[in-house]
Amino acid sequence: MKKIQSGDTVKVNYTGKFEDGSVFDTSMVEGREPLTVTLGQGQLIPGFENGLIDMTIGETKTIEIEPKDAYGEPVEGMLQEVDKSQLPEELEVGGMLQAQGPEGVFNVVIKEIKETTVILDANHPLAGKKLVFDLEVVEVM
Image 1 (tube, helix red, strand yellow):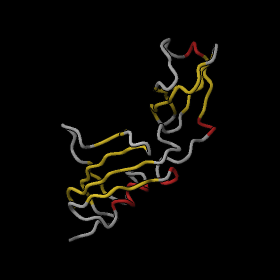
Image 2 (image 1 turned 90 degrees about the vertical axis):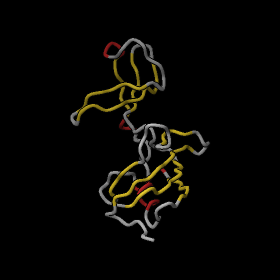
Image 3 (image 1 turned 30 degrees about the vertical axis):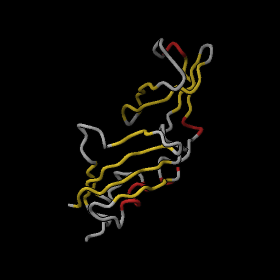
Image 4 (image 1 turned 135 degrees about the vertical axis):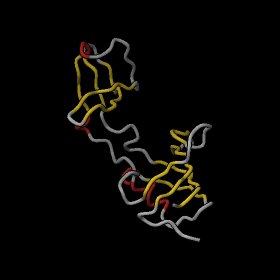
């Protein structure tokens, strides 16, 4: 049976979890198709892609991905203090807002709400987190 290599296009079912077992994303819900991706093109976080290498059709496994092979560690420079008057009225810590940057729209997380300002975090929401993925190879094309 063919083992997956870089350059292969694969269909994979996955469930992404945090270390405590809580699920943050899955393809295993009604109406969702397996993830179809070509390895070696930078479409996946490195740890996810490396986890698929050498798997075969029908194989399942669980992988743990350290932050450096996922979304990296949070970067202090990605925090920004913004005047409350520039933001919507309904704000809560942990909430998400969309911001406009030179490369388009991106999401920021509300980190802290002060009297007249708000601290926004533009780090990826999964930065600094160890991720656990259950993988199942559905097809290799």
